[in-house]
Image 1 (tube, rainbow, N blue to C red):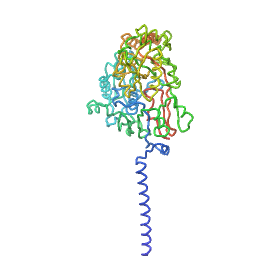
Image 2 (spheres, one colour):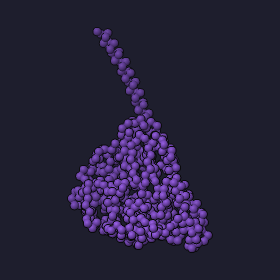
Image 3 (cartoon, rainbow, N blue to C red):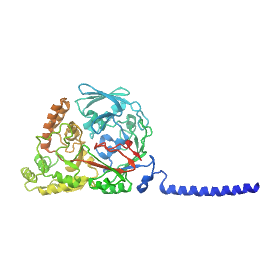
Image 4 (cartoon, rainbow, N blue to C red):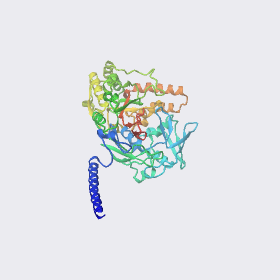
Length: 526
Protein backbone atom coordinates (compact mmCIF):
# COMPACT_ATOMS: atom_id res chain seq x y z
CA UNK A 1 0.00 0.00 0.00
CA UNK A 2 2.85 2.34 0.82
CA UNK A 3 4.56 1.51 -2.50
CA UNK A 4 1.31 2.19 -4.36
CA UNK A 5 1.15 5.69 -2.84
CA UNK A 6 4.72 6.36 -3.93
CA UNK A 7 3.96 5.26 -7.49
CA UNK A 8 0.91 7.52 -7.60
CA UNK A 9 2.99 10.37 -6.21
CA UNK A 10 5.59 9.85 -8.94
CA UNK A 11 2.82 9.71 -11.58
CA UNK A 12 1.30 12.91 -10.16
CA UNK A 13 4.68 14.70 -10.21
CA UNK A 14 5.28 13.62 -13.81
CA UNK A 15 1.79 14.82 -14.84
CA UNK A 16 2.45 18.11 -13.09
CA UNK A 17 5.68 18.54 -15.06
CA UNK A 18 3.86 17.87 -18.34
CA UNK A 19 1.08 20.30 -17.41
CA UNK A 20 3.60 22.99 -16.49
CA UNK A 21 5.41 22.50 -19.79
CA UNK A 22 2.11 22.75 -21.67
CA UNK A 23 1.14 25.97 -19.87
CA UNK A 24 4.59 27.42 -20.57
CA UNK A 25 4.17 26.72 -24.31
CA UNK A 26 0.71 28.33 -24.28
CA UNK A 27 2.10 31.44 -22.59
CA UNK A 28 4.90 31.74 -25.15
CA UNK A 29 2.45 31.38 -28.04
CA UNK A 30 0.20 34.02 -26.48
CA UNK A 31 3.11 36.39 -26.16
CA UNK A 32 4.00 35.89 -29.81
CA UNK A 33 0.50 36.25 -31.22
CA UNK A 34 -0.88 38.83 -28.78
CA UNK A 35 -3.35 38.40 -25.92
CA UNK A 36 -6.31 40.15 -27.46
CA UNK A 37 -7.31 37.42 -29.85
CA UNK A 38 -6.91 39.92 -32.72
CA UNK A 39 -4.96 38.83 -35.77
CA UNK A 40 -4.18 40.51 -39.06
CA UNK A 41 -3.05 39.58 -42.51
CA UNK A 42 -3.57 36.09 -43.96
CA UNK A 43 -4.59 34.57 -40.61
CA UNK A 44 -7.51 36.96 -40.18
CA UNK A 45 -10.12 34.60 -41.58
CA UNK A 46 -9.43 32.07 -38.82
CA UNK A 47 -10.89 34.44 -36.21
CA UNK A 48 -14.46 33.67 -35.17
CA UNK A 49 -16.86 35.98 -33.35
CA UNK A 50 -16.82 39.69 -32.60
CA UNK A 51 -13.39 40.01 -30.98
CA UNK A 52 -11.53 40.85 -34.17
CA UNK A 53 -10.93 44.52 -34.95
CA UNK A 54 -12.43 45.54 -38.28
CA UNK A 55 -10.12 47.93 -40.13
CA UNK A 56 -11.65 50.49 -42.50
CA UNK A 57 -9.67 52.59 -44.95
CA UNK A 58 -10.00 56.37 -44.70
CA UNK A 59 -8.44 58.42 -47.56
CA UNK A 60 -8.00 61.70 -45.63
CA UNK A 61 -6.58 62.63 -42.24
CA UNK A 62 -8.97 63.32 -39.39
CA UNK A 63 -9.44 66.89 -38.25
CA UNK A 64 -11.56 67.03 -35.13
CA UNK A 65 -14.14 65.15 -33.07
CA UNK A 66 -16.34 68.24 -33.06
CA UNK A 67 -18.96 67.62 -35.74
CA UNK A 68 -19.86 71.29 -35.85
CA UNK A 69 -16.37 72.42 -36.77
CA UNK A 70 -15.73 70.26 -39.86
CA UNK A 71 -17.13 69.28 -43.25
CA UNK A 72 -14.64 66.43 -43.81
CA UNK A 73 -15.90 63.00 -44.87
CA UNK A 74 -13.14 61.41 -42.79
CA UNK A 75 -14.58 63.01 -39.65
CA UNK A 76 -18.15 62.11 -40.65
CA UNK A 77 -17.12 58.44 -40.76
CA UNK A 78 -16.38 58.72 -37.02
CA UNK A 79 -19.58 60.56 -36.12
CA UNK A 80 -21.74 58.02 -37.96
CA UNK A 81 -20.61 55.31 -35.53
CA UNK A 82 -20.46 57.35 -32.30
CA UNK A 83 -23.37 59.79 -32.43
CA UNK A 84 -27.04 59.66 -33.30
CA UNK A 85 -29.44 62.24 -34.67
CA UNK A 86 -33.12 62.98 -34.30
CA UNK A 87 -33.90 61.49 -37.70
CA UNK A 88 -32.00 59.35 -40.20
CA UNK A 89 -32.53 59.27 -43.95
CA UNK A 90 -32.65 56.07 -45.97
CA UNK A 91 -31.12 55.57 -49.42
CA UNK A 92 -34.33 56.75 -51.08
CA UNK A 93 -34.40 60.00 -49.11
CA UNK A 94 -37.15 58.95 -46.68
CA UNK A 95 -36.90 60.14 -43.03
CA UNK A 96 -36.76 57.39 -40.40
CA UNK A 97 -37.01 57.62 -36.58
CA UNK A 98 -33.80 57.60 -34.56
CA UNK A 99 -33.52 59.58 -31.31
CA UNK A 100 -36.93 60.99 -32.21
CA UNK A 101 -39.45 58.16 -32.29
CA UNK A 102 -42.05 60.39 -33.96
CA UNK A 103 -42.75 63.98 -34.94
CA UNK A 104 -45.45 66.36 -36.11
CA UNK A 105 -45.11 69.27 -38.53
CA UNK A 106 -47.36 72.34 -38.40
CA UNK A 107 -49.49 73.15 -41.43
CA UNK A 108 -47.28 76.14 -42.32
CA UNK A 109 -44.13 74.00 -42.14
CA UNK A 110 -42.54 76.22 -39.51
CA UNK A 111 -42.91 74.15 -36.35
CA UNK A 112 -41.61 70.62 -35.72
CA UNK A 113 -42.51 68.74 -32.56
CA UNK A 114 -40.15 65.82 -31.88
CA UNK A 115 -41.00 63.05 -29.39
CA UNK A 116 -37.76 61.47 -28.10
CA UNK A 117 -37.06 57.86 -27.24
CA UNK A 118 -36.86 57.42 -23.47
CA UNK A 119 -34.05 54.88 -23.20
CA UNK A 120 -31.12 56.50 -25.02
CA UNK A 121 -28.03 56.72 -22.84
CA UNK A 122 -24.90 58.77 -23.56
CA UNK A 123 -21.50 57.14 -23.22
CA UNK A 124 -20.95 58.93 -19.90
CA UNK A 125 -24.07 57.31 -18.45
CA UNK A 126 -26.35 60.34 -18.77
CA UNK A 127 -29.83 59.72 -20.19
CA UNK A 128 -30.88 61.68 -23.28
CA UNK A 129 -33.26 64.53 -22.47
CA UNK A 130 -34.92 67.26 -24.52
CA UNK A 131 -32.52 69.75 -22.93
CA UNK A 132 -29.62 68.01 -24.72
CA UNK A 133 -31.29 68.60 -28.09
CA UNK A 134 -31.86 72.28 -27.31
CA UNK A 135 -28.28 72.61 -26.07
CA UNK A 136 -26.97 71.01 -29.30
CA UNK A 137 -28.74 73.52 -31.54
CA UNK A 138 -27.48 76.42 -29.43
CA UNK A 139 -23.93 75.02 -29.34
CA UNK A 140 -23.84 74.56 -33.13
CA UNK A 141 -24.42 78.27 -33.71
CA UNK A 142 -20.88 79.02 -32.56
CA UNK A 143 -19.51 77.17 -35.60
CA UNK A 144 -19.87 77.97 -39.29
CA UNK A 145 -19.11 74.59 -40.85
CA UNK A 146 -22.64 73.20 -40.45
CA UNK A 147 -24.45 76.53 -40.54
CA UNK A 148 -26.48 75.60 -43.60
CA UNK A 149 -28.22 72.83 -41.67
CA UNK A 150 -29.48 74.93 -38.75
CA UNK A 151 -29.50 78.53 -40.00
CA UNK A 152 -33.26 78.28 -40.55
CA UNK A 153 -33.88 77.38 -36.89
CA UNK A 154 -35.45 80.31 -35.05
CA UNK A 155 -35.68 78.53 -31.71
CA UNK A 156 -35.48 75.14 -30.01
CA UNK A 157 -37.54 74.72 -26.84
CA UNK A 158 -38.11 72.04 -24.22
CA UNK A 159 -41.74 71.10 -23.83
CA UNK A 160 -41.00 68.27 -21.39
CA UNK A 161 -38.13 65.84 -20.79
CA UNK A 162 -38.89 63.92 -23.97
CA UNK A 163 -40.48 66.53 -26.24
CA UNK A 164 -38.69 69.24 -28.23
CA UNK A 165 -40.29 71.98 -30.31
CA UNK A 166 -38.13 73.44 -33.10
CA UNK A 167 -39.41 76.55 -34.86
CA UNK A 168 -38.08 77.68 -38.24
CA UNK A 169 -38.00 81.20 -39.62
CA UNK A 170 -38.59 79.93 -43.18
CA UNK A 171 -40.16 76.70 -44.48
CA UNK A 172 -37.43 74.22 -45.36
CA UNK A 173 -38.49 71.16 -47.38
CA UNK A 174 -35.41 69.21 -46.35
CA UNK A 175 -35.36 70.15 -42.67
CA UNK A 176 -35.83 66.53 -41.52
CA UNK A 177 -32.94 65.59 -43.79
CA UNK A 178 -30.88 68.42 -42.27
CA UNK A 179 -31.32 66.94 -38.78
CA UNK A 180 -29.18 64.01 -39.91
CA UNK A 181 -26.27 66.47 -39.99
CA UNK A 182 -26.88 67.41 -36.34
CA UNK A 183 -25.57 64.72 -33.94
CA UNK A 184 -27.01 65.25 -30.50
CA UNK A 185 -24.53 66.21 -27.77
CA UNK A 186 -24.71 65.65 -24.03
CA UNK A 187 -24.89 69.06 -22.34
CA UNK A 188 -23.15 67.91 -19.15
CA UNK A 189 -20.25 66.32 -21.04
CA UNK A 190 -19.63 69.38 -23.22
CA UNK A 191 -19.69 71.76 -20.26
CA UNK A 192 -17.34 69.52 -18.26
CA UNK A 193 -14.90 69.78 -21.18
CA UNK A 194 -15.13 73.59 -21.27
CA UNK A 195 -17.11 73.45 -24.53
CA UNK A 196 -14.10 71.96 -26.33
CA UNK A 197 -14.97 68.58 -27.84
CA UNK A 198 -12.33 68.63 -30.56
CA UNK A 199 -10.51 65.65 -29.03
CA UNK A 200 -13.23 63.93 -27.01
CA UNK A 201 -16.63 62.48 -27.89
CA UNK A 202 -19.74 61.38 -26.06
CA UNK A 203 -22.72 60.25 -28.10
CA UNK A 204 -25.57 57.78 -27.77
CA UNK A 205 -24.38 55.62 -30.66
CA UNK A 206 -23.24 51.98 -30.76
CA UNK A 207 -19.51 52.82 -30.58
CA UNK A 208 -17.29 54.89 -28.28
CA UNK A 209 -14.00 56.61 -29.13
CA UNK A 210 -11.00 54.93 -27.50
CA UNK A 211 -8.15 56.71 -29.28
CA UNK A 212 -8.02 59.74 -31.55
CA UNK A 213 -4.78 60.22 -33.50
CA UNK A 214 -5.68 62.51 -36.42
CA UNK A 215 -2.74 61.62 -38.67
CA UNK A 216 -3.02 57.86 -38.09
CA UNK A 217 -6.39 56.49 -37.02
CA UNK A 218 -9.41 56.59 -34.77
CA UNK A 219 -10.05 53.54 -32.58
CA UNK A 220 -13.61 52.73 -31.51
CA UNK A 221 -15.00 50.09 -29.19
CA UNK A 222 -18.49 48.74 -28.71
CA UNK A 223 -20.96 50.56 -26.48
CA UNK A 224 -22.35 47.66 -24.46
CA UNK A 225 -25.09 49.89 -23.05
CA UNK A 226 -26.50 50.75 -26.48
CA UNK A 227 -30.28 50.83 -26.19
CA UNK A 228 -31.05 48.53 -29.11
CA UNK A 229 -28.45 45.82 -28.57
CA UNK A 230 -24.63 45.76 -28.56
CA UNK A 231 -22.94 45.75 -31.96
CA UNK A 232 -21.84 42.37 -33.29
CA UNK A 233 -18.33 43.64 -34.00
CA UNK A 234 -16.52 44.76 -30.86
CA UNK A 235 -13.65 46.97 -32.08
CA UNK A 236 -13.20 49.26 -35.07
CA UNK A 237 -10.15 51.00 -36.50
CA UNK A 238 -10.74 53.83 -38.97
CA UNK A 239 -7.27 53.93 -40.53
CA UNK A 240 -5.89 56.80 -42.59
CA UNK A 241 -3.69 55.71 -45.48
CA UNK A 242 -2.19 58.49 -47.57
CA UNK A 243 -1.78 56.44 -50.72
CA UNK A 244 -4.71 54.56 -52.27
CA UNK A 245 -2.43 51.98 -53.91
CA UNK A 246 -0.86 51.11 -50.56
CA UNK A 247 -4.32 50.76 -49.06
CA UNK A 248 -5.31 48.32 -51.81
CA UNK A 249 -2.23 46.21 -51.04
CA UNK A 250 -3.31 46.16 -47.37
CA UNK A 251 -6.81 45.14 -48.44
CA UNK A 252 -5.40 42.25 -50.48
CA UNK A 253 -3.26 41.08 -47.55
CA UNK A 254 -6.10 41.28 -45.03
CA UNK A 255 -4.70 44.19 -43.01
CA UNK A 256 -7.62 46.33 -44.18
CA UNK A 257 -11.08 44.77 -44.38
CA UNK A 258 -13.25 47.44 -46.04
CA UNK A 259 -12.54 50.32 -48.38
CA UNK A 260 -13.77 52.43 -51.25
CA UNK A 261 -11.51 51.28 -54.06
CA UNK A 262 -10.37 53.51 -56.94
CA UNK A 263 -11.98 52.26 -60.19
CA UNK A 264 -8.61 51.57 -61.79
CA UNK A 265 -7.96 49.00 -59.07
CA UNK A 266 -11.47 47.64 -58.62
CA UNK A 267 -11.40 45.09 -61.43
CA UNK A 268 -8.83 43.06 -59.50
CA UNK A 269 -11.43 42.31 -56.84
CA UNK A 270 -14.59 41.87 -58.89
CA UNK A 271 -13.99 38.24 -59.91
CA UNK A 272 -12.15 37.25 -56.73
CA UNK A 273 -14.18 35.08 -54.35
CA UNK A 274 -12.04 36.29 -51.43
CA UNK A 275 -13.79 39.66 -51.66
CA UNK A 276 -17.24 41.16 -51.99
CA UNK A 277 -17.74 44.20 -54.23
CA UNK A 278 -20.61 46.66 -54.52
CA UNK A 279 -21.02 49.64 -56.84
CA UNK A 280 -23.19 52.43 -55.40
CA UNK A 281 -24.57 55.64 -56.89
CA UNK A 282 -23.99 58.30 -54.25
CA UNK A 283 -25.39 61.80 -54.60
CA UNK A 284 -21.91 63.21 -55.13
CA UNK A 285 -20.30 65.56 -57.64
CA UNK A 286 -16.60 65.94 -58.29
CA UNK A 287 -15.83 69.63 -58.76
CA UNK A 288 -13.00 72.04 -59.43
CA UNK A 289 -13.54 74.86 -56.97
CA UNK A 290 -12.64 78.45 -57.85
CA UNK A 291 -12.51 81.00 -55.04
CA UNK A 292 -14.38 83.90 -56.64
CA UNK A 293 -12.93 86.32 -54.10
CA UNK A 294 -9.41 85.88 -55.47
CA UNK A 295 -7.89 87.01 -58.76
CA UNK A 296 -8.38 86.14 -61.53
CA UNK A 297 -11.47 84.15 -60.49
CA UNK A 298 -13.32 87.28 -59.39
CA UNK A 299 -13.97 87.79 -63.14
CA UNK A 300 -16.96 85.79 -64.45
CA UNK A 301 -15.58 85.79 -68.00
CA UNK A 302 -12.37 84.12 -66.78
CA UNK A 303 -14.42 81.52 -64.90
CA UNK A 304 -16.46 80.84 -68.03
CA UNK A 305 -13.27 80.43 -70.06
CA UNK A 306 -11.97 77.95 -67.51
CA UNK A 307 -15.26 76.04 -67.76
CA UNK A 308 -15.08 75.75 -71.54
CA UNK A 309 -11.47 74.58 -71.21
CA UNK A 310 -12.45 71.54 -69.12
CA UNK A 311 -12.59 68.23 -71.01
CA UNK A 312 -14.87 66.49 -68.53
CA UNK A 313 -15.27 63.21 -70.40
CA UNK A 314 -11.49 62.77 -70.64
CA UNK A 315 -11.24 63.44 -66.90
CA UNK A 316 -13.87 60.77 -66.23
CA UNK A 317 -12.08 58.26 -68.47
CA UNK A 318 -8.57 58.94 -67.15
CA UNK A 319 -9.17 59.83 -63.51
CA UNK A 320 -12.12 57.56 -62.79
CA UNK A 321 -11.98 54.78 -65.38
CA UNK A 322 -15.22 55.92 -66.97
CA UNK A 323 -17.29 55.36 -63.80
CA UNK A 324 -19.09 58.69 -63.95
CA UNK A 325 -21.55 60.99 -65.74
CA UNK A 326 -20.65 64.48 -66.98
CA UNK A 327 -21.93 67.11 -64.54
CA UNK A 328 -23.36 70.56 -65.29
CA UNK A 329 -24.08 71.63 -61.73
CA UNK A 330 -23.55 70.08 -58.29
CA UNK A 331 -26.72 68.01 -58.70
CA UNK A 332 -28.13 65.71 -61.35
CA UNK A 333 -31.57 65.10 -62.82
CA UNK A 334 -32.28 62.51 -60.10
CA UNK A 335 -32.72 65.52 -57.79
CA UNK A 336 -36.13 67.27 -57.76
CA UNK A 337 -36.10 70.58 -59.62
CA UNK A 338 -32.99 69.98 -61.74
CA UNK A 339 -33.76 70.98 -65.33
CA UNK A 340 -31.06 71.97 -67.83
CA UNK A 341 -33.41 72.71 -70.76
CA UNK A 342 -32.48 76.38 -71.19
CA UNK A 343 -29.19 76.45 -69.29
CA UNK A 344 -25.98 77.51 -71.03
CA UNK A 345 -23.93 74.58 -72.27
CA UNK A 346 -20.29 74.74 -71.20
CA UNK A 347 -19.24 71.57 -73.00
CA UNK A 348 -15.54 71.29 -73.83
CA UNK A 349 -14.62 74.01 -76.32
CA UNK A 350 -11.01 75.24 -76.08
CA UNK A 351 -11.49 77.81 -78.88
CA UNK A 352 -14.33 79.51 -77.00
CA UNK A 353 -12.16 79.39 -73.89
CA UNK A 354 -9.33 81.23 -75.68
CA UNK A 355 -11.72 83.85 -77.06
CA UNK A 356 -13.16 84.53 -73.61
CA UNK A 357 -9.69 84.83 -72.10
CA UNK A 358 -8.87 87.43 -74.76
CA UNK A 359 -12.13 89.23 -73.98
CA UNK A 360 -11.16 89.26 -70.29
CA UNK A 361 -7.82 90.88 -71.16
CA UNK A 362 -5.59 87.83 -71.47
CA UNK A 363 -5.09 87.30 -75.24
CA UNK A 364 -1.79 85.50 -74.60
CA UNK A 365 -3.06 83.37 -71.75
CA UNK A 366 -1.68 83.64 -68.24
CA UNK A 367 0.65 82.05 -65.72
CA UNK A 368 -1.55 81.61 -62.65
CA UNK A 369 1.33 80.74 -60.35
CA UNK A 370 3.76 83.49 -61.36
CA UNK A 371 1.25 86.26 -62.06
CA UNK A 372 -1.29 85.62 -59.29
CA UNK A 373 0.50 83.33 -56.83
CA UNK A 374 -2.12 80.64 -57.52
CA UNK A 375 -1.36 76.95 -57.15
CA UNK A 376 -3.81 74.25 -58.21
CA UNK A 377 -4.39 72.42 -54.93
CA UNK A 378 -5.24 68.74 -54.96
CA UNK A 379 -5.48 65.70 -52.71
CA UNK A 380 -2.58 63.28 -53.30
CA UNK A 381 -3.09 59.55 -53.67
CA UNK A 382 -6.72 59.92 -54.77
CA UNK A 383 -8.62 60.35 -58.05
CA UNK A 384 -8.54 64.11 -57.31
CA UNK A 385 -4.85 64.12 -58.17
CA UNK A 386 -5.57 62.70 -61.63
CA UNK A 387 -8.41 65.18 -62.10
CA UNK A 388 -5.92 67.98 -61.44
CA UNK A 389 -3.33 66.53 -63.81
CA UNK A 390 -5.77 66.24 -66.72
CA UNK A 391 -7.22 69.70 -66.12
CA UNK A 392 -3.73 71.17 -65.84
CA UNK A 393 -3.17 69.89 -69.39
CA UNK A 394 -6.56 71.32 -70.48
CA UNK A 395 -5.49 74.74 -69.21
CA UNK A 396 -2.12 74.49 -70.94
CA UNK A 397 -3.98 73.95 -74.22
CA UNK A 398 -5.54 77.43 -73.90
CA UNK A 399 -2.31 79.10 -72.79
CA UNK A 400 -2.84 78.94 -69.02
CA UNK A 401 -0.02 77.66 -66.83
CA UNK A 402 -0.43 76.57 -63.21
CA UNK A 403 1.63 74.51 -60.79
CA UNK A 404 0.04 71.68 -58.81
CA UNK A 405 0.31 71.60 -55.04
CA UNK A 406 -0.70 68.75 -52.72
CA UNK A 407 -2.62 69.30 -49.51
CA UNK A 408 -3.32 67.03 -46.55
CA UNK A 409 -6.01 69.40 -45.24
CA UNK A 410 -8.40 69.92 -48.16
CA UNK A 411 -11.49 70.48 -46.05
CA UNK A 412 -9.78 72.93 -43.73
CA UNK A 413 -8.55 74.78 -46.82
CA UNK A 414 -12.03 75.27 -48.26
CA UNK A 415 -13.64 76.12 -44.92
CA UNK A 416 -11.10 78.87 -44.35
CA UNK A 417 -11.08 80.02 -47.98
CA UNK A 418 -7.34 79.36 -48.03
CA UNK A 419 -7.17 78.49 -51.73
CA UNK A 420 -7.84 79.92 -55.18
CA UNK A 421 -8.19 76.76 -57.30
CA UNK A 422 -8.56 73.20 -56.04
CA UNK A 423 -10.17 69.82 -56.61
CA UNK A 424 -13.02 68.91 -54.28
CA UNK A 425 -16.26 66.98 -54.06
CA UNK A 426 -19.77 67.90 -52.96
CA UNK A 427 -22.90 66.01 -52.01
CA UNK A 428 -26.45 66.76 -53.05
CA UNK A 429 -29.88 65.32 -52.18
CA UNK A 430 -33.14 64.24 -53.77
CA UNK A 431 -34.34 67.87 -53.76
CA UNK A 432 -32.40 70.80 -55.28
CA UNK A 433 -33.26 72.94 -52.25
CA UNK A 434 -30.35 71.20 -50.51
CA UNK A 435 -27.94 73.00 -52.82
CA UNK A 436 -28.29 76.17 -50.79
CA UNK A 437 -25.42 74.67 -48.78
CA UNK A 438 -23.27 74.56 -51.94
CA UNK A 439 -24.22 77.91 -53.47
CA UNK A 440 -25.92 80.03 -50.79
CA UNK A 441 -24.35 82.49 -48.38
CA UNK A 442 -25.23 80.13 -45.51
CA UNK A 443 -22.75 77.63 -46.95
CA UNK A 444 -19.70 79.90 -46.62
CA UNK A 445 -17.34 78.34 -44.09
CA UNK A 446 -18.80 74.97 -45.03
CA UNK A 447 -19.70 73.41 -48.38
CA UNK A 448 -19.89 76.63 -50.41
CA UNK A 449 -16.42 76.09 -51.86
CA UNK A 450 -16.53 79.12 -54.17
CA UNK A 451 -17.21 81.44 -51.18
CA UNK A 452 -20.03 82.92 -53.29
CA UNK A 453 -22.54 85.30 -51.71
CA UNK A 454 -25.14 86.38 -54.28
CA UNK A 455 -28.37 88.02 -53.01
CA UNK A 456 -30.34 86.73 -56.00
CA UNK A 457 -29.22 83.16 -55.34
CA UNK A 458 -30.17 83.40 -51.67
CA UNK A 459 -33.55 84.93 -52.56
CA UNK A 460 -34.38 82.21 -55.07
CA UNK A 461 -33.45 79.40 -52.68
CA UNK A 462 -35.68 81.01 -50.03
CA UNK A 463 -38.48 81.41 -52.56
CA UNK A 464 -38.23 77.76 -53.60
CA UNK A 465 -38.23 76.60 -49.99
CA UNK A 466 -41.38 78.55 -49.14
CA UNK A 467 -43.32 77.41 -52.21
CA UNK A 468 -45.56 74.36 -51.67
CA UNK A 469 -46.79 73.77 -55.23
CA UNK A 470 -44.34 71.32 -56.93
CA UNK A 471 -44.62 72.82 -60.43
CA UNK A 472 -43.93 76.30 -59.09
CA UNK A 473 -40.91 75.03 -57.18
CA UNK A 474 -39.58 73.38 -60.35
CA UNK A 475 -39.91 76.66 -62.24
CA UNK A 476 -38.04 78.53 -59.50
CA UNK A 477 -35.18 76.06 -59.43
CA UNK A 478 -34.98 75.91 -63.23
CA UNK A 479 -34.46 79.67 -63.36
CA UNK A 480 -31.97 79.54 -60.49
CA UNK A 481 -29.96 76.75 -62.11
CA UNK A 482 -29.69 78.73 -65.35
CA UNK A 483 -28.32 81.68 -63.37
CA UNK A 484 -25.81 79.61 -61.37
CA UNK A 485 -24.51 77.78 -64.44
CA UNK A 486 -23.94 81.07 -66.25
CA UNK A 487 -22.17 82.48 -63.18
CA UNK A 488 -19.70 79.56 -63.12
CA UNK A 489 -18.77 79.72 -59.43
CA UNK A 490 -17.13 76.30 -59.80
CA UNK A 491 -16.61 73.65 -62.46
CA UNK A 492 -18.73 70.55 -61.83
CA UNK A 493 -16.86 67.61 -63.41
CA UNK A 494 -18.81 64.39 -62.92
CA UNK A 495 -21.26 62.48 -60.79
CA UNK A 496 -19.31 59.44 -59.69
CA UNK A 497 -20.00 55.84 -58.86
CA UNK A 498 -18.48 54.49 -55.64
CA UNK A 499 -16.99 50.99 -55.57
CA UNK A 500 -16.76 49.32 -52.17
CA UNK A 501 -14.74 46.18 -51.57
CA UNK A 502 -14.61 44.11 -48.40
CA UNK A 503 -13.15 40.80 -47.33
CA UNK A 504 -15.46 37.84 -47.90
CA UNK A 505 -15.52 36.82 -44.23
CA UNK A 506 -17.12 40.15 -43.32
CA UNK A 507 -20.86 40.78 -43.60
CA UNK A 508 -20.82 44.48 -44.56
CA UNK A 509 -23.44 46.89 -45.86
CA UNK A 510 -22.70 49.95 -48.01
CA UNK A 511 -25.18 52.72 -48.80
CA UNK A 512 -25.60 55.13 -51.70
CA UNK A 513 -25.19 58.14 -49.44
CA UNK A 514 -21.92 60.02 -49.91
CA UNK A 515 -21.86 61.32 -46.31
CA UNK A 516 -23.36 58.25 -44.65
CA UNK A 517 -21.90 55.35 -46.65
CA UNK A 518 -21.82 52.79 -43.85
CA UNK A 519 -22.64 52.03 -40.23
CA UNK A 520 -20.48 49.34 -38.65
CA UNK A 521 -23.41 48.56 -36.37
CA UNK A 522 -25.03 46.81 -39.34
CA UNK A 523 -22.00 44.56 -39.87
CA UNK A 524 -20.84 41.24 -38.47
CA UNK A 525 -18.11 38.67 -38.95
CA UNK A 526 -19.05 35.45 -40.70
